[in-house]
Length: 166
Image (cartoon, one colour):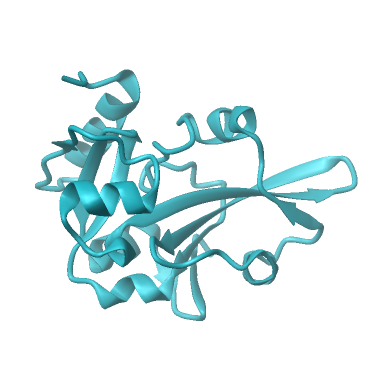
């Protein structure tokens, strides 16, 4: 049985502070990918939130940007760059960068505890589902969240992507 790690406890404490009446769910199988998570939860792959961190490099400065993408879709890096309003070259970072910026390992990045200083884009296609599933800080832990709650927490605006903290 996979015990709650410090990362999982951090997500759980965050949800409690937010007043969310949510129980974290421990999966017996890994949810390292959206497909794995959907199989473990017996749900549509599109209802899985992929929390993908990108980096935008501009000369000697690197800016992180987070994209919350429906599990059955791929992120369009050019569109993510445009929607982020950052200038530079976008690329997928290595595991060390993801851990440094988010505090989570790849496969366990939780979308609700990301720094307010990081732009977060939400794939509008996530609104197809009444219930979404997000990582709770580890590949064996998830939690349910509605699209409305995700939007309310992230204070997003509608476009092809939703962008918040403006």
